[in-house]
Length: 94
Image 1 (cartoon, rainbow, N blue to C red):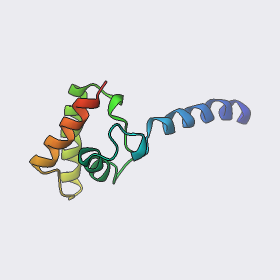
Image 2: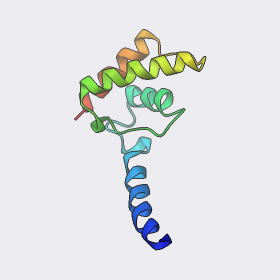
Image 3: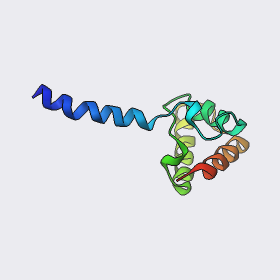
Image 4: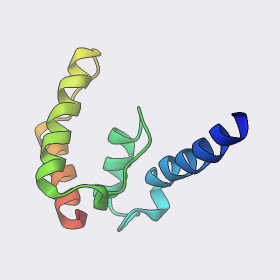
């Protein structure tokens, strides 16, 4: 039974970690927008690649993350930060 679980879990874990990305693998990784995305969105969780979602999905995700930051008494994105991040995600979305 343990071998079966390992055969199932190891590929799952590897595929999940492949979804996370390091800042260097981001499009335009050295741009101010990518750096802001990394700093604000990667400070609490692994950073998803912009191509992971369509732009409309990113809009919904950013709105959800804004809510979660407020619930956790964290400073939400400013309007300017949100615009920069959404423009970056739109340029590199699926």
